[in-house]
Each structure stands twice: as C-alpha cells, then as structure tokens.
Image (tube, rainbow, N blue to C red):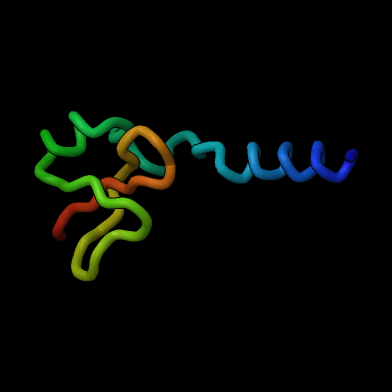
Length: 64
C-alpha cells in the first residue's frame, strides 16, 4: 500500500509541467492563434513542439 503512495507522488512530480520550458502556450486558443495545431502524443514529422494544449499529453506543434 505504501508503494502506491510513492508511485502516485512520483507520477505527480514527473507529469507536472516545468515553468519556462514551454513558453506561454498552455491552452488550445493560444496554440491555434499562433498558427499551430494541437496533437495528442508526439508532434508529427516536420513539426516542432512549442507548448501544450491544456494537458501535458496533448502537444502544441508548429511547422518551423
């Protein structure tokens, strides 16, 4: 049971967004306004990861 608490705390810290890493793009509206797309998982080829769209699993991707 104590292992579950350790696992949840590790996942919480691991999935917490780092300040300053992704710039100012943190929601879908600013992502689309900057000319980018929201994509689940990794960005497609030839796209650059510039932020997140609300949750860390959905990335904001823009063509360079």
